[in-house]
Image 1 (cartoon, rainbow, N blue to C red):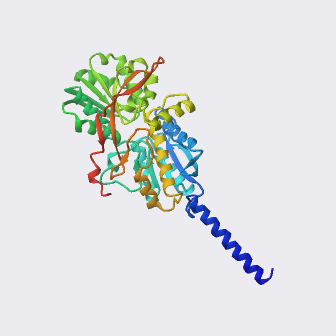
Image 2 (cartoon, rainbow, N blue to C red):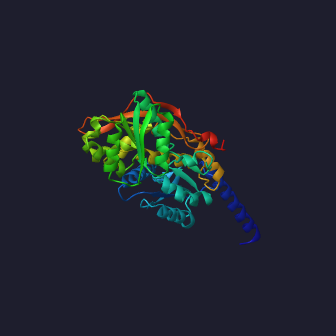
Image 3 (cartoon, rainbow, N blue to C red):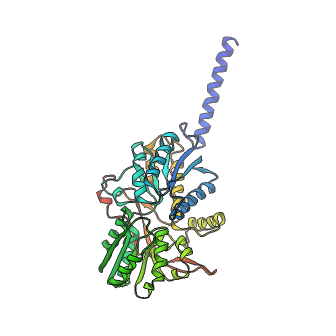
Length: 402
């Protein structure tokens, strides 16, 4: 090739390259867009509490599938692993996903104690964690972190709503029961923050405990008007069965947080769940378009009714989808990604949703009651007006982020 032809060839190459870059820009992608988005998903997928993690996983995966296997326009690779309900295992899995797999986001953990053990691996390595469930008070206040986002609800919030429900029902005495870990302590603190009556007993059980004979005897002796429990997963299923079997329901009203009266509990416990009141930020009967689509697609895909855990997994994926979309796939710009996440420009299945300054939700909480689904089964039905409206948390003012 002679000199003039070489110059012409180079000029054409530059022209074609320039046109290609213009085409990419006009298509909405930065020249620095990633070729895919990688997500480390660590959750409890085995053991008595596995139903919670399975539902979060299935909700998350459904959102990815409905987006054509993409999030924010990029192919999504979701690396799923089981923490086995063990904090040390979760920490090792976080380290592997972050240091070996080079993920862009971490998500998935169910329980606060497991998340708090593993979370430093993400924060120390500048990886954003999107929490689809665990949202402890410690991360909401002074220890708030720009890389931590809670898509679910502050640990205290369901229980604050339950306290408001107890007040609404003019209850004068309540006994409290929860496992002895961070979320358990937050739960009862939240209830006591709002409830105006007398706490006649308060008991913290072993995390993962399944036999409650001793606790039931103490409750019977205390003779409360109502009992409020925070016992997620298999703990709640076993307790409610034993509560009913002991005949305590005839003399003590049982109040529940939403996850202790959800589909994963209703199924194993059965008809005795009918008529029980609980509080939640989401209900299967919500009529917003996002929830109608979610309910139909989840039932079609998995042949069961989703729990609130599934709704949170679904919303977590939608939040990531919106952020990746808004930064046009440029995942290296962490500050831009964080700002996109904070804006929360997605249609949540729960309806109105926004982040507080501490990156915990501000949202409505409703009273639900377990009733007939019209097909021989039971399902939660929500009251039209929220019992707490646009509710944040008690710790946001301690968070320095603004």
